[in-house]
Image (cartoon, rainbow, N blue to C red):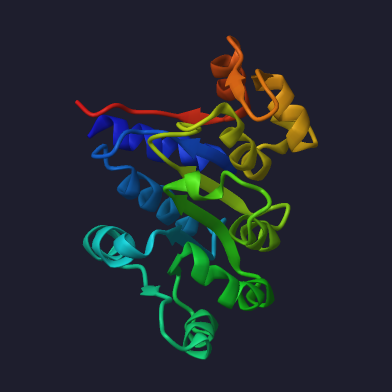
Length: 217
């Protein structure tokens, strides 16, 4: 589909970016094509894919095996963390991992030094900067690491949720501290109740850039 090609092209041009396309628009394939293209150019050696446990095989490994069949891929999931580390030590070009499994292999990823691209699916999992999950992802990001974060529903619960995502992709788009961002997008109603400001949607849109979105046709 034309929008898949457009999304793939957009990703190849942006070191760090968001894909906010709706479910069913084929954004998985777009990201894989873009990664493959950058591998062909020698700009990416290895790619880490972070996604929910439930879609590691059914979505990501399946699309990898059906589309860019010339690339090697593995799902780094095993009851023993030592087995997961061994999987990183091998030379698979694409490594698929669940969010909370990353902390078991983060040191090995940093030691390897060849993971030039990280793709995060259902990226809302990284909306909160105080979580171990967020901090672990941040710990494997070098200044030159590419990062593509994908979700159909960015900041769907609250405007403050945009903060954690923006801090990973484009930290200059948001204030240095979370409380400053909260005060920017929310009004304090009572001691425990906050409500979005009228300008919150625009502020979130500005924070979560560069981004591309396709709707299901």
